[in-house]
Length: 230
View 1 (cartoon, rainbow, N blue to C red):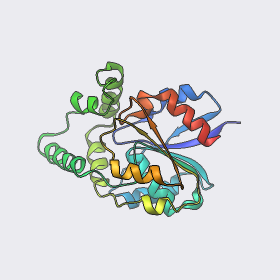
View 2: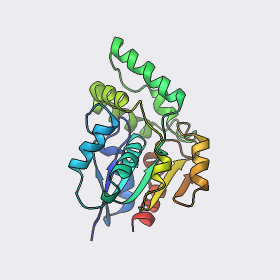
View 3: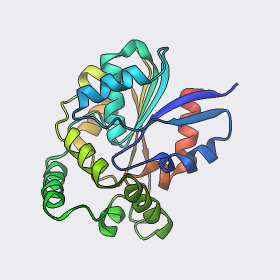
View 4: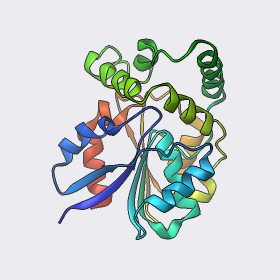
């Protein structure tokens, strides 16, 4: 019997985010890509997901921005979540440096238009080992190009304000697991330490991994998914 997992992607990511991990999983677990609704803030996006996702408790998986949305959904509608795994996110607000970079990017695009994710930015989302992996960089840039300027503006604007969700998330009754890369510069070391010390969830840290876990470590991520959802 095939088990469905509903997957919320990160900023400027499409179904290609999951393809290598799905190949590593085989056919017993199906990663169902759920595009992020084109709405103006986290609250209304969560409401749209409430309407579109299955009404029974589901296996939920979120990556990066999608991880934050999955946390917000699980807090508001815990009865709809069977198990939750969060990749490259901690249910916390953006680091101040990242928030500022996004504000600068939005101002630039408003004046100059969007010309796609720079190669340097794509490289920075990968581990040092993979920072010049042309195949991974091309996937990041291709997903970004497919979604384009309108999605870029909507996703950045809608997710700038991210209230702290972790304390309330840890009170949920559903099994909860976090998976992060040891070279992910977008995550707070202090928040990761809180998660690591908690007995209410699990934290897996993947070596030689940056932010783009499903692209860099599809086999390891697949193994963790199998263990957690099976």
